[in-house]
Amino acid sequence: MTEQDVDGVDEALALVGPPPAGRAASHPPGHRDTPWERARATAARAGRATAARTRRVALGQAVGQVLAAPLTALTDLPPFDTSAMDGWAVAGPGPWEIRAGDSVLAGHAELPALPDGVAVRIATGARVPAETTAVIRSEHARAEPGRAGRPCADQGGGHLHARREVVPGQDIRPRGQECRTGDELVPAGTAVTPAVLGLAAAAGYDELTVVEPPRVEVLVLGDELLTSGVPHDGLIRDALGPMLGPWLRALGAEVTAVRRMGDDAEALRRAVTGSGADLVVTTGGTAAGPVDHVHPVLRAAGADLLVDGVRVRPGHPMLLARLTASRHLVGLPGNPLAAVSGLLTLAEPLLRGLAGRRAPEPYRAPLRDAVQGHPDDTRLVPVVHRAGRVVPLHFAGPAMLRGLAAADGLAVVPPGGARPGDEVEVLDLPWTAFAAAPPALAPRPSDTPASTARPTPAQGRCFT
Ligand SMILES: Nc1nc2c(c(=O)[nH]1)N[C@H]1C(S)=C(S)[C@@H](COP(=O)(O)OP(=O)(O)OC[C@H]3O[C@@H](n4cnc5c(N)ncnc54)[C@H](O)[C@@H]3O)O[C@H]1N2
Ligand code: MOO
Image (cartoon, rainbow, N blue to C red; front, top):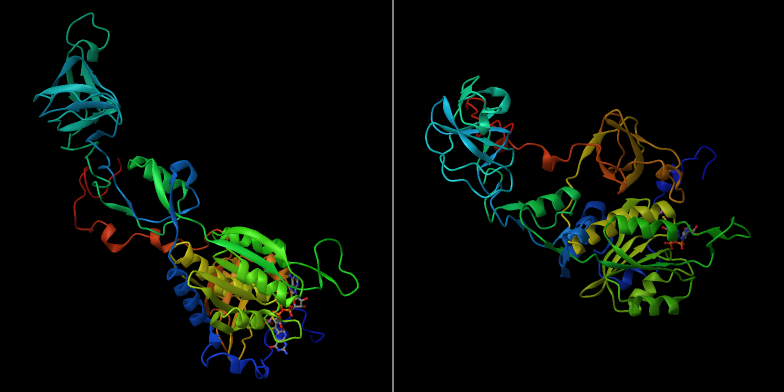
């Protein structure tokens, strides 16, 4: 690192030398140094191609999991014509004769059809009697007592007068307004949020079919790693063990173990081949140093290298291997920010596929400051969102976590770099709230009533 290079940029931009002798020859051509976008697509495809395990769980247990099947309505919603307001159900033109004693409450059995010229008291959420023309809110009606001595008009007959024009259908939520039985409410791959739970309950579900979270085992390699205390005598703290477990969980994985392995090729081979996890994540040992055992172990295990090196900085030695038809291994480089780069480039799309989750809509944001680029490789740079732009952070070298710890996401800087104002893709960190409105919730043109259409109370612009 140069004296000026406190951010680690020189190191992040370092060009790769020729591949170490003997390694390139052992892999088929075309696998090495995959472009960043293609590496992500390969990982996502590998995840999707692996059959997911599913299970049925009670609604209360489903939050945070992923729907294995579309949520289709088991009922019309509302299931019956419903009053949207407390007031009066009326039939035909007014004034209406108030039917003594009758009043319709939510949850009660259906009343007989309302004869023309009659009004009955009705509560919000109550089933509207057949032949009802409209519901009039209490504050928009005047009840005239029928006989002297009766305290309340609605208890003793009398007549109801509307204080304003009554539009047929007003304040009635028609059966099926939100959905019909069998309509798809949300697709498979949707994460079960509290809102999805509420919708599922409303639509008649007691249980949901969800994808079992993929099981992930983390193997932290390196004899130089301490698990406690301050670095000393050439030893450093393991920064990845504490970080990867919760990060992988945030990506929807069930982390079965985080094991510290040292630099022992045979122990690594046994751990990799003996693991029952859907995904083994290793850290360190991906390069070609004397104790970098990941490649030789994968060769010995007969693994198929789907991605072996990615044109991204930091993290270019990252790899993805298929161990068996249903088990994969992601090799993260040892430098901590390089490991995060590998996590987002390979592990995140793979896990998304394994967990049956849909890909988030990619989004771009303008850069506030210029970012120096690598001539050939993509760069992932920690950024924060500020006033609609993203600001690159300092201390973003491959071995540094200081920038990342303050970041909202990683900006994807194309080869050659980016200037202030250039729009770059941003990968949110799992704990960052959406900075941009999720496009899936933005209204589509077909959702918006045409400006020429006259809204009526029962359709179009609906406030009830
Ligand atoms: N001759 C070359 N050497 C290296 C190249 C290269 O292209 N040619 N690439 C460099 C890059 S870039 C990276 S990244 C690393 C990747 O190396 P490994 O994956 O083999 O990782 P290690 O050598 O085991 O460790 C690298 C570095 O990271 C520290 N480390 C490892 N694990 C942890 C941990 N759990 N917590 C904190 N720090 C960790 C380790 O002590 C090393 O300092 O290779 C370069 N070399
Ligand atoms: O710089 Mo390395 O790129 O740490 O992966």
